[in-house]
Image (tube, rainbow, N blue to C red; front, side):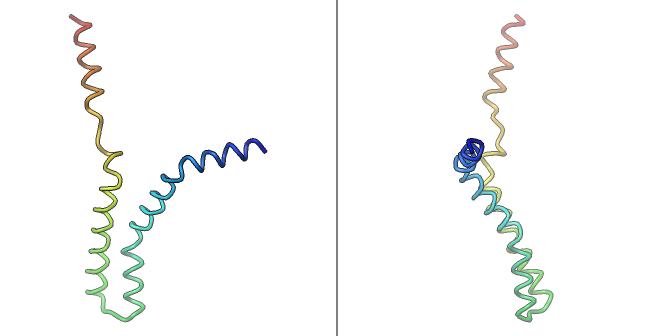
Length: 90
């Protein structure tokens, strides 16, 4: 029973990350879902392709802004370690 409490604690502590992941999955399949909906309604292929691609581009841009904090490398820490190594060599 204690392992269940521990696992639920992990899920509780990472709930925001789970929601972010679900949002990213929704953004990545939104263009396909919209294209299927337009096909069901009866639009032609040109409008479906243009709308699907537009929605996908918007989704990619939003995903970039959501994931930007994970993509930007931390240059300060690496430069400090390089500077420390250079001073030790002198």
